[in-house]
Amino acid sequence: MCAEVEETLKRIQTHKGVIGTIVVNAEGIPIRTTLDNSTTVQYAGLLHQLTMKARSTVRDIDPQNDLTFLRIRSKKHEIMVAPDKEYMLIVIQNPSE
Amino acid sequence: MLTDPQDHLAHQFPLEGELRPTFSGLSDFLHRVEDMIVKELAKNAKSHAFDGFDVNWEDQNETVSCKHRLQHLVAQEKGLHVTSISWSCTGSVIACAFGRVDDGDWSAEKSCVCTWNLDRRGLNPKRPNTVIDVARPVMSLSFHPTSPSLIAGGLYSGEVVVWDTNRTQDPVLAQTGMSTDAHREPVYQVAWVPGQRRGEMLVLSAGSGGRVLLWTVDGGSLVLSAGYALVRQQVPHNSSLSKGRGSSNVGVTSLALSPWDSDTFLVGSEGGLVLKCSFSAQELAAAPPDGESVALRAPAQFSFSPRGGPVHSLHYSPFHRNLFVSVGTDGLARLHSLLQPDPLLSLRVSDSYLFGVRWSPTRPLVFAAATGQGLVQIFDLGRKSLRPAATMDQLTSGQPAYCMEFNPCQTDLLAVGNADGSVNIWHLSTELTEQGHRETAQLEQLANEVAE
Image (cartoon, rainbow over all chains, first blue to last red; front, side, top):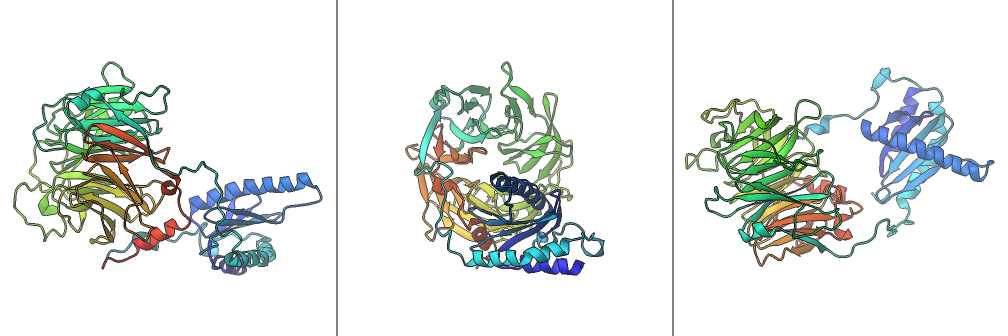
């Protein structure tokens, strides 16, 4: 089981332009990462909050709807968040590389 | 070639191997999202949807303009030069030191340190908010990194002083006086460095006597805490320089602290040496003892290829741990990697002396150089042309521009101190301050090139 997790993360991480991959649990605590400690903690905390806010925004507008994916495009990167009940996957990509 | 120790550190969190806890459902979750993520990553890599798409969050500033021209008439009448400037940690106050940089015995010349609060209403550029009278010319100045009212200064006489601008009666908080521990020659650089204890800051001073000294504030005195002496015989790889001529002391004209490694610092000398030094060096200096209360150590560990004249200014890149730039009397700006003696790049900035160099705090590829003709030239290493991206005339009728500092908070402000006693505050254009798309990568590429 453990090896499968590592292989999946490796496949994502080695994709073109990917700078970092982080898996966060339901409390917003990072449990796997390819980045250094302090950067990981920063991304995990901030994006967990933002994802929860994005989710409540979608559900407030339409209670039958729900968040499936979150993308943030900035000057330097694109941050992608795949949310779920127990975990959240964060991938940071430099698309132009 | 030296290797970079950072390459060998692995960044894995938490622990590797069997000690990793397993999380139920993690494998299923990743299985569910993998395809979707990989599809989006692939689409992104090929997409042109955002090509050329820019958002203007800030007001765009098209031009470089001089916001203020600060002058202290009393100092100007005496023909004093601005030798050093420093911004307070809040970015609101600029302090300037007056002294003389040209040849001559200025030991009896009285001078001052002036401050202007640029954020205060009713700013009068011809009237400083604070004027501290000093009995001797001040050669270097540095605001405390967290206490906005404390300034350290190095004098022509070798003394080091800390002033507190909040004190109205006598602004001197602590000084070295003329003790046996003090420098005997002008102090060209002062800086604040963290001490052993939490929150403690020491004053570092370096001068043409070849001494780099660390002081603690103790009551009204600066007490010597540690000291280093730079002696010709102890400079590494020094076969190219002649030995035994004149003093064996290596006079320090510039010093730079590394923002990446608190143990390392760079020293530029009167003779054109550029040395990498360490605070934790253990070897004792080969200087004859002169009544100092601490044993002086030899800090130099590595010599970069020497220059043809005094090295007036050095600055570490805020964006790359191995890069620094140096300027001197040969009119060249040299970009160095810490890992090799020869420069990566030598740029002809001016036919005159260069007195100051500073990297931009926001654009990795940009640096500014102050010339002996009173110009500040800004270079953008990302451009194909080696000509300056901007030229700022200090309007000094050809007199030199001696020092420059970027405002630590409002990073598009650059202060320049000149020989005619004026300090100009420049507002840089958005083009010179907003980081480009791939700048950090380009800088990395530059750093990895081996000099021919």
